Length: 291
Length: 318
Image (cartoon, rainbow over all chains, first blue to last red; front, top):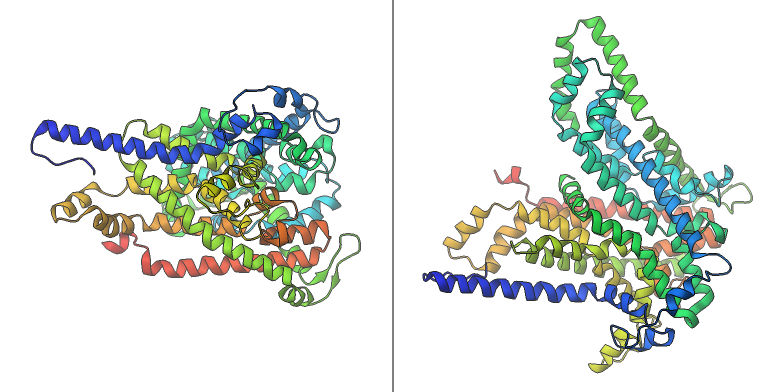
């Protein structure tokens, strides 16, 4: 768009090069603003506590390790590892639950013709737009009456019961796109639905399943309201709640450790993102567009 | 949508098999269908439909978790509408939705337009711009925001250089909400990716033709790009405003656990959380939840109604 339309070949070339340079400078400038908080937290984690708020430097003048080594003490007698293993357990179970239940449901919607399918599909899509808060209180009452408060059950039950309509929808869209001939051939060969699901449709749906798995992991890892409502015992806290404990009990006196822990808490999310960003972004784009 | 698709398939199935076997086959298909989706059916009944009915009932009761719910009719709603803190929470939420959503979409569209040009390192830029959307929901980022926007911190000091001394945003009831708005805008990655996918589908011939007719870049954007991506724009407006209505974590973490100095960041869900889980007023909180559902449904309905006026689908153009 910015390239010059000069008749002379080499000036056009030069124009294009300048256009490209302008583009990169512009993109990098926006990127610098966007990534500033990320770089800031990286730098701040190596600053002495008193400098974190006060210092204007993005990076520490004299890097210190104290913030990270301070994490080893844990908080109120609970080790940082405990928060991490709780979060890992929650996120791991969530991934297994979502992948299993959503793919089974999606297979039924995409590949089986049964009575009432359209009505159920409409209901499923309807739950996408329903504000979660209307279910919050009755679900709390339900799990409380069942005696599941202060356990992971309320946090993961929905994942095993395919209540995350977004992922069901994503997988249905994907499975509908798979060539019909494949499952028809399987049927002729005498495969039942279970076999077709497990050996043909599931392996072919890998991109949709990986997208759902990563999003589920990251959502569960970042989840704050769920653990806030359902978990009471500090030793069962996830990383999000552990961070809140840091803030409430240490206050700004130990700002350094708080920032260091914030950074450490982001590591799994960023690592997952770096490893799978291509899947994630494409999954995001296609699911959005087909809606 | 699916109704149309399925219609021709049924007679085809009937033709291929003898009537008796067809009926047995169909029954087997029904059974298989229900078996496969039994997790969803259980989840829908237990965790969605059941709770919806329960919360509708609670909305008309006084319920503190410890004694059985007591029917009070419309009392929760009348108290709610007269409650100054509820009114405040509506005001705060509307302000948040109205300011954050357009700004976020504007930035998302701007960056998407930038990235839609084919340049080297595009995938890398795309990933970097998307990153805040993933980590933004974390409590960690809430802390970072607090540190950046608090009194005498980076943002405050930078402002002082320009002579705009407001004394930090976090402690200032007039500004604290805008630090949350900034956090929301910062997470522009998801709508950006959707815009980007939309931009890639605009036929290049349209631009070439317009350029030949002498249309400048602004004109091309207004007359080609915008109408062509209007379905995607509609989708983003719908999704982002519904999300904005439900903001909670940032208000709780960034400002403080009571949702702001002088209730300045008392967003709707934060008040709902306080009423339900701090004060055990489950009936009142349920009434609040249903009011939110109705508000979101109204916004959705208005948006769907308005799309006739500004969203161009390709079928309509033909």
